[in-house]
Length: 478
Image (cartoon, rainbow, N blue to C red):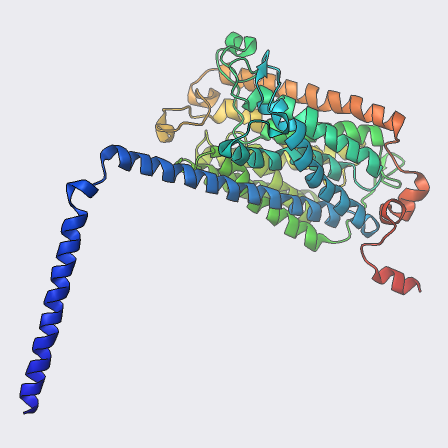
């Protein structure tokens, strides 16, 4: 009896499975019928739509990473300066982002990417007039870059600069200094001064300037603008005694290192996002080259300080990482891994030599080393393109779409690429330093660039903002 019941149960299960298979077959037949088949054209459109969506999404993620770099800048600058100026530095970095958003929306984008006028400046799209989905996506990515230049200046002039003067300068950096130079390099205009096919400079040399993600556009402009500011604002009280540089230690190395690592993470979006295409297979080469150069830059600077002083210097080592990242930002999509290693090693040397030269020879007071990191290493990054570029269509770049057009000097390409890169170096120095010097001079005359001696000694937290970043100090005083 039990066997018969088991047999009947098994028979029912088989019948259920048979019915299920029939239903599945019918569904398959319906779906595969000609009326519902996807044509090749429809399939291509669907793939293209997916690729566009991925690019939009990747640029938003990359933009978020670059935006987060402003937190890194805030922490580096705060950690390498004294506690009495913490709130002031945080406010400057915070307002740099806030003003950067508004000014780049109103003016900066139009100046940089608007309709070209003589290869020098954009003339429309102010307030994002006529923008579409693609423009909004591109605007956000470019906006987070724009504010970085002013942040570089903030760190170099920390602990003695008038807050109101800095805010005015920040507006002018995002509205004028950065986007005009950016137009010459990244606008895509046929007559763009340094990159357009019809530019007199490009025609004369025979090849366009290449700056993948901003060694020149962002870092050199920011670094040499900082140099102008530091020269005019002067050194902090007590920095030099009898012509000798006196160390003024920062108050929190922990947050300085955290900020450095946040900046390094941000470079994933800074350089990786600059492919401007989530489907570009060379994004991975860009990322690997970026972090190789940064890592070897840190090791190189650490080794130099160890040999020179007998101790590995933490803050200089952190700057070695940043210097390598800055230097590789221009060539990262045009070079091999070994090229990135070489570029990072030289950047590490430049960091140590640059900081020492600034302090001991030029008597410049740059609390965070911004001039060496962004100015000098940015210059080296531009030059390195002309030396280490493989060239589109060659070797590992056989299928690349965004890299330096021709090989550099070390790859048999001659001097043309190196020459256009050197021209760009000269222009970044003249434009960034020269225009910023004029602006700072005017600000000094109208507003006052530097706080008073009494205010500097008291600390900018109290005199500029009426607050202490660390209120436990008040408890101790009471």
